[in-house]
Amino acid sequence: MRRLTLPVLALLCSFAAAPAAAVTSGSAAPDFVLKSAAGSNVRLSEMRGQVVMINFWASWCGPCRQEMPLLEKLQQRYGKLGFVMLGVNVEEQSQAAQKFLKDVPVSFPILWDTSNSVSRLYAVKAMPTSVIVDRDGKVRYIHPGYKAGDENTYSDTVRALLRE
Amino acid sequence: MRRAATPLLIVAALALGGCAIEPWVAPYERANLSDPIMSFSRDPVSASYMNHVHEVREGARGAGSAGGGGCGCN
Amino acid sequence: MAATRSGWRYGLLAALLLAGGADAAVLPEDRADLLYHSYDGGGVEVSGPSLLVRKSLGDSVSVYGNHYVDTVSSASIDVLTTASPYADERTEQGAGVDYLRDGTTLSLAYTNSDESDYKADTVSFDISQDMFGDLTTVTLGYSQGNDKIGKSNDPAFAATATRQHYRVGLSQVISKNMLLALNLETITDQGFLNNPYRSVRYLDPLSALGYSYEPEIYPATHTSDAVTLRARYYLPYRAAVYGEYRRYGDTWGIDANTWEIGYLHPWRENWLLEFRLRQYSQEAADFYSDLFPRQQAQNFLARDKELSTFSSRSLGVTVSYDPGLHWNFIERTAFTLSLDHIQFNYEDFRDLTKAATPGSEPLYEYTANVLQLYVSLWY
Image (cartoon, rainbow over all chains, first blue to last red; front, side, top):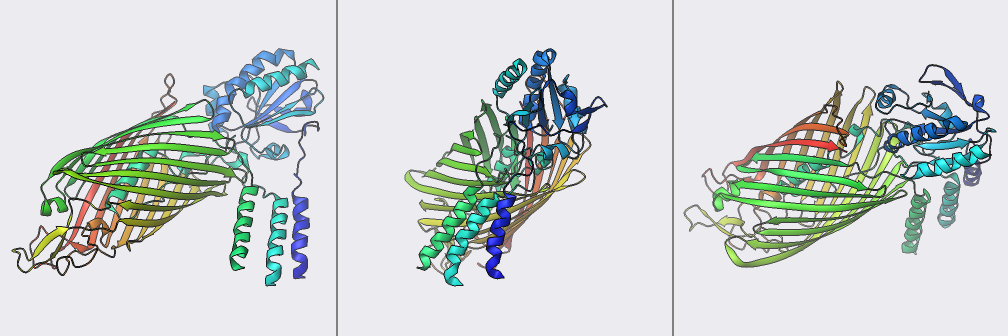
């Protein structure tokens, strides 16, 4: 029995190594529905036909706060061309995020992922994480983290997808 | 059993390597850890001064600071 | 054979640790702090400012500068019994740079401490690595120090000492609400390690006091090891509790234990309160004695109360207020007041200001009050 323990463990671990949700470039973006700050429910599949950028953020995350005004710029620039930014807030309690949004208001929908179901669905590995989905609902670009200048990459990707 | 120890350790290492230890606190679950009150050194100017106050009057020295925790962003 | 077996295991452990891969991190916050500090105890008054300014340059680099001053007026027990009260000023300046790439932070720092009879230069290098999904942080550090010792009443006196620090740290996220950190530091110094003004006393029946003085003699080398374990826990109603334990030992025979516990309580929107308790105890150095039996009783002689058997207990409280200011480039401000009350009790260091038969003077004890008042700006 003891002789089998290690090989069995190795076998189990090799299965565990495969990620739970395979959200990779080219795969279909998993659908979800979340309550928005405006009060209505927002469903991802309803955005089919538009280029969608899903940004996972939190008010306690420095780079997320830094990125927010730049995401608003993206929305202002491409909104009329068939683009929508979805700001998915991952906090269990929304008060801190609401306070932040008073100081940094945005025109795109803010969705409350209070139970982290969507964060898990998208296997979010860094804060913030941006996922860009094309008009057919396919994930085309995943970007973990935020560093100054990343907004240019987002802009280029969105523009390319809008042209498709 | 002793002779098998080294090869067993190699297999264990490979098995664990294959496992790629999944973080048990996801990046989006770090709200509390990123709170300034959870920082080991919230005010460096004060921490460094108090460390000096103690070191000057005590025989012990060293192992005074710690980092880590935080928001784990980027 | 046994040595290669161990080698295998350490190699395996290193491979496992590094297999976690590099993750990511953020630079320390941009902030400026202006502190007024004051220490008053045992006849010693030390006060002065400390200015610390940190700014990031881009996303990868953060620099800081520090200017610190100690204005000392000392009528301490040592001074009262063997010298005369004095005043001095010590200035310490430091600067450092942190470079962040992926999950690795490289830090370089330099400090220079300058007073009339003591100059110290230290260069430090630290490397910090985030791994295992940013749950673990491993740090390695090295510092090198060079000291020049002088004597205010003897311009011909010049001595030197060098120091080397080796640091290892591991910080681990235990749960959504708990952090643990382990730090080890080995410091080795050599050269002139004692105080050129200090003396030891020995029994001398020929002297009026019953004892006489001779200069202290310390070993030319000193190696110490310290290990600190820290834990911090987040309480559900938004508060934090922390504990810290440090174990210290060195080649001079000093063994010390430090315990600290604290509680942080945010109150209302803008206030933060902290309460802490610290307990320190140490065993005397091997060559320490309050009263030696005769002159040149042993190779090494010390009567420095810092090397004696003693314990100290301190109680501290900090109150911090954030007025919620938002002005131009200033994101946040805070005003903090911190008070610590320390009680020192010596078990083998006697108060010679109180005359008695040599060796039976009362044991020395004193209290000190530490005040800190600072303004912090985040930008």
